Length: 489
Image (cartoon, rainbow, N blue to C red; front, side):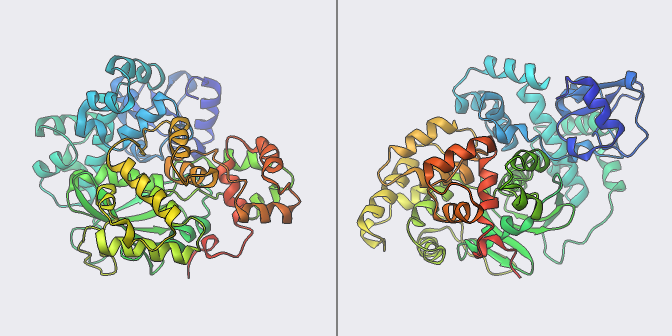
């Protein structure tokens, strides 16, 4: 969008928050870059230039606005709705791969040369992977500076910087303030009596309907791994450097997030995975406008706009849970998963009580005796095959996976039909166009609305909903009285 100058100027002049994260405005007279909704008086159009990323602004010599804080904008929805090389690379960079494995590690995961990745990122985002990762480290550093009392030396390494001097120079260059000055400006906030907790706000584009989002996560919560308590969803996290626990609370204009991490180097990854689980980078206005073009679907959208697709923090975990939930009730699936967690999950210490384990890794589940699994023989075979494929690396499920290729690999496994594959594509892989025409709840809702109820006819009708059929699924499911559709009391 940043190449459409006239459209960008209109968005800046109207302070349209919907475009925050889509592009950034750099002001040539002040050398400052802002989000489109910056509250200051808009600059003259001839003094504006537009960039696709904060990293591109920083490389061009602009510093972040102190009023609108463009580093806290929601992420671009482009990276979660596309499956090409650039989108997959951006998802991996957000997951901290460049900080942990460098650009060669990013290239290895994507199956391309480092030169090809750099060329495509530069062409579309105006910055290479190192610059994009540097911008992300700067944002992580700011969060740690403003929300912790860590010594600056410890904080620099926790944010992913390899040297304190680089940390100081980057913070000064990006924010026009030293780390100490940033800390002095930050308001002191209570962390709710939980020692070691980080408290931050996760922004999103409005509207956001929390009912099905948190309702789904709470209704399917695995005992010991997840819980709903006092209006918040809590769960354990398996992160690269250690375990974590997150508490997420819906607010009118943000998601309140409280993180307890075993290693602060996991902060960026934890934030990225929580945002992905809650689908916070979606553009609900564009999605709902497309779905409203169907006159039978429009009343559902108008009744409760802004539905998101509840996703996951761990793709392999969700695939295992999808198999456990085949042809059984939600309660039965939770029971099966809870037994596996108790027997094979890694214990964690929850200062607030309630959470006890990480969900078992594929390697731990691959060692499970199949005879100990309380499920039919065919599903037992499906389960053991899946965890074996995951544990031995023959099947990759992650933010970098190619959706089409992964669907084909899953369909080749015994016991994996279209429903299981599509629900994994929708909620684990993040495909916004995944569709479940054979789902009983979808067919029942379609029949009640006057839509075609047979899978083939419904798929044909749903062609007009593309590329947002996964969101149409959420609206259709919402016609039922199942607990997944309601925010818990």
